[in-house]
Every structure is written in C-alpha cells, then in structure tokens.
Image 1 (cartoon, one colour):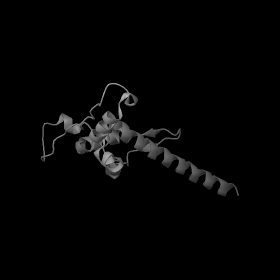
Image 2 (cartoon, helix red, strand yellow):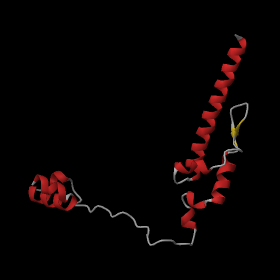
Image 3 (tube, rainbow, N blue to C red):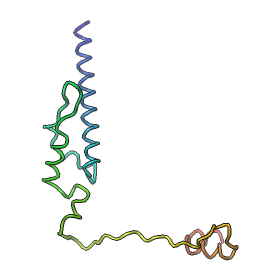
Image 4 (cartoon, rainbow, N blue to C red):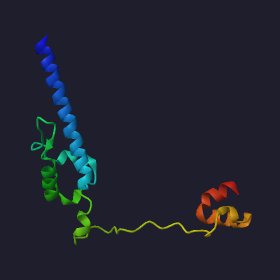
Amino acid sequence: MRNEAQTTAEARAMEIAGVRKDAAIRTAAVTSGLVDMECLPLLDITSISVDENGNVCGVEEAFEELKEKKPFLFSGAMENSTRVSGTAKLASAPRAKSVSSGSIRDLSEGEYRQSLKKLAPSYARRYN
C-alpha cells in the first residue's frame, strides 16, 4: 500500500514538473519574440530541467541558442537585418477616413447615406 502511494506521488510530481516545464517554455517563447509557436519543436529541450523546488532552469539559454541558429524565427530579427529577400514590402494598413468631426447623430439623412457609401459600400448597396 505504501509503495503504491509513493509511486503515485512520484508520478504526480513528474507530471507537475512537466506542466511547469511546458509553461515556462511557452512563456519564454512569447517573451523572446518567437514568431510562431509551431517552431517550438526546433528548441533543444535537453538542457531544460526542473529542480527539486519546482524552478525551471535552462529555458533562456535554450532560446538564446535557437535565436543564434535561426534568428528569422524571432520578431525583430528581420528589422535589424539589411538583407532583403523577395518582392514583398512592408506597408501599413490604410486608415479609415473620418466622415466628420461631429457625431453621426448630427448628420442629415443625405449626409448619412453618403458617408455610408464611402465607409461600407457593400452595406450601402444592400440596405439602400
């Protein structure tokens, strides 16, 4: 009976350590700027361990190593690089034009219909 309880307790402790390790890896992935969580299998987790106090060790070093090997997997890596590949250019999204500085309730019906045609043409076609 005592052996069974001890093995169950050890199994639960290993399970908790695994959950802590996974949580620490995911947290470090977000804070390090990993672009896609699907890149986590590329991380060398052999050096990551959980000590007897429940502290996870080696996560930062593993991400630093991955960042050195594959810097393109992290945000900010391409901005620092002078290399340009492909034909795509970064562009900001167009801003919505303001109809008027006042409230929409202050518009006349004609002004409202005109602003609706500018902001949402498909909506204006359906309901006008």
